[in-house]
View (spheres, rainbow, N blue to C red):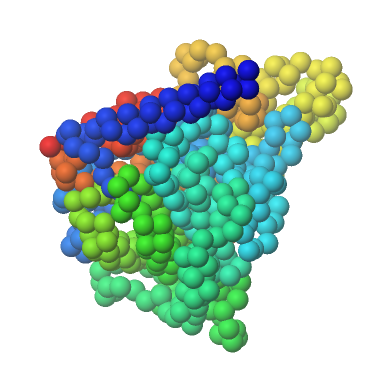
Length: 553
């Protein structure tokens, strides 16, 4: 009996290996050519499409211009979900699934049953390697409910590697999927680290990178404007009054004047400058060399999420000179990175994709000056008004616990204690939200789980951002040019409007795709199925769209 069981197990393993080998041998990419040796997936956090086109004439010859002049690029690529934030976007890109399938509805949310805060990539069973792990730090993809292109690739080709790097934990962990490896920037030390979800200890190349303390070279270095002052005429001048008490002006020194040596404050500030991108690219170069990516006879994936642009746009807005200059600095860094890829991997051996996880709304002060209704909303005061209205109808108590993602969360314990009807309370909460001057739309859980109501503005986008197991009880959206106030953000994102949903989508790989501009509207959920086809593997299990309308040779 034991022999028979072992024999069956051996045959099963042999059959699985044979199937994987057959899949790998039959993998055919677009144009009937083998898959690329390396797929380089580049994400610029918080880059709206309007910035990519506005500054095109100032780009270097072979940075963004390589995509725009030699690649395929989509002029009307949009996310279909309403809460356009970093974690949600990073979960969409390589899964092909909206938040309603990935379960990653926001950067953080509340457990709908208990009200306890949840961080999108938190996992208390895993810790950072060599670094302190705080509450709500991102350490694993436990909360991601679907597979990525990398997961599918590694199932078909276990020798393939999927490495994801980012200045933010969520920017690395979510693209890496369940079976890749994520490395994130550590603001405490200026290095990069993985977590124990992926490995017990870092490989030698990671230790060598961190021991060299690469961030320290930027201590007391100035971020200077790349071009003469006149080149930024289309952008807002520095030190706008609504930047806040710290202001914002170039040149900008990295490291406080009183500091004698680099410390956590400096390492944190580095990621909010062009030097943060430089560190991320340098770590990516180290990963290519250390893991021999694209150089081992099997296709690999390298995901690089560049976080600095998002931080800069939050602090100064996408309309600022600082944001304008940062994109030009990033363009020159991309040109240098392309040159390194050409040398190490070979120009005809890799495909590069560049996109963003979300766009960015203009600061309310900018749109107000243009004559548009705009403003900042106090979320605490809004919650108080909703609870006051609910108390008036249903009796004493804080019936609404708070906001969770893009939804209002009701207190289920209080509802049960008072034997109230949750559907009636949700309907009243919706009515109260819609009475607010800044609210554009709101829908209850019952509506989101049913057919689309008649004359339902923004319903599809709001439903794509809502997950029944994760989200709250009333999903809502603010009107255009309105945002919740923040002590640190002069501008933000997270709406279903074009300034937040429309992002660049650029593809370079002449052996696989013909160059040219595509004006047909496309949804970002089409990216993952397209890349799965490129790699000759099945589409991820949560993907909901077809492939991009991209021409092949």
